[in-house]
Length: 161
Image (cartoon, rainbow, N blue to C red; front, side, top):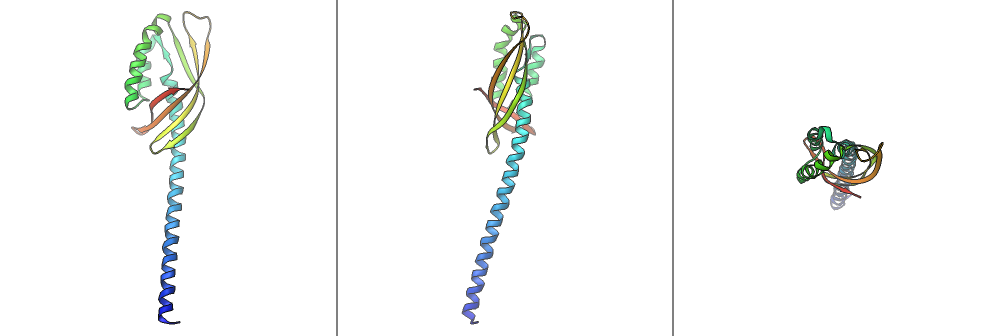
């Protein structure tokens, strides 16, 4: 083999090695990203379920404790919105002696983008108050936008569907 052919073979082998390393690195990165998305999905759905039950439940007898509990699951601008919303609801809840217990019947990821996960939550609210006899059930769907904060996924936005 001539020296020229030997260089050509060496260059081709180097190029093939670089391409293989690049493809291998990309595939490893994709696998790692998919694992991170799966972990985020699982954790955010669990945290969204817990948060929804706290945020959408209330009891006129222990209002402040309920709001404080719900606030633990909020972050960003939604924290202020939640406090404002509950403050507006308190007079009616107190007058009607309202008790609402929220329970998640199902939840699933709609979308994952970066550090934000959108979770669709099917929520049953069992309510009692002075104006109704027995217990009524409201079936709701809520989209919760979850963001990582303080080591867990917290509600950054909520919208009824």
